Length: 155
Length: 155
DNA sequence: TAAATTAAGGTCAGAAAAGGTCAAAAATGA
DNA sequence: TCATTTTTGACCTTTTCTGACCTTAATTTA
Image (cartoon, rainbow over all chains, first blue to last red; front, side, top):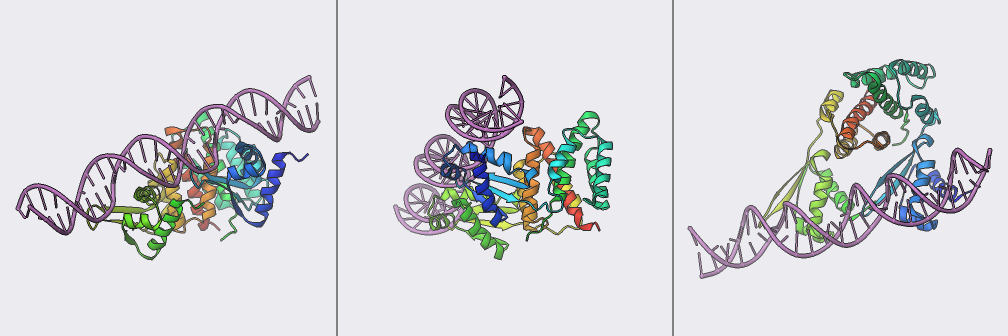
């Protein structure tokens, strides 16, 4: 139990409990835990990804940093993970209709939002068909739903 | 955060918050921040370019100056259509950063929304590069922004 | 007035300072 | 055992910063 990754995760969570967003320096954090810098990336990838409700943003070069932002997914905490599981790499028109219907039923989306997502994606898919369309649809739907489901309570 | 470039950017933005256009002297600004003059050019190129909504005009020789002008985002009645025009068929990472920056400036998006959009799209683009990435980025960004922008009109 | 001088700003390549990627090795646990 | 997770390190990319050298415009001087 409690590998180094767990300890780093715990440390970052403590920081994030006090602020919605924190900024770290990869090198410095790595020194602090006496590990190689890429270990920090591993922790970020496995513990602070979008499924778990975190956004990671970074900048290289002098004055570089890594910013971790906690997202408020309050109403449906595991929605992002489930969406990715459900949508996967390809998604047909019928599957999308079914999913949007269910999301409206579950009151995750309003009917207007579902209609909007449908029409915007439809528009974007004009001229594309077959497997290519299914791949593109999966990507577009993921982006649309993740964007919509972000409850922005801040500011 | 806060590299020297960030500090210079911050200083100039404060000036530009009070006036639509400002004039600076490269040498004097460089002395003020204890850096080499070309550092000022770097800040102008990376932070005050056209994508971010600024125009830079300069004159050499005695009495030379650099003028930075903020281009105001006209509150266009039909933002969605406008976005489609701006984004077009391909959109680079740099262009996206600039557009998101401007949308936050114009208070069309909150900072969190911009971070979310960028992060989700970045996630979706892993493994894709070059022209293919620019095409896909344009599509994803359109869907994300149109989805967000229409949200206000529903219910 | 033409040339020389001075006073700006511009360009570009390279060094420095971050963070990123990926695959292999090591550890873990079912 | 053997599949999964963690850890490591070699190598890569991006961003910032610096300095040498270039161009342009105004001013001074012959």
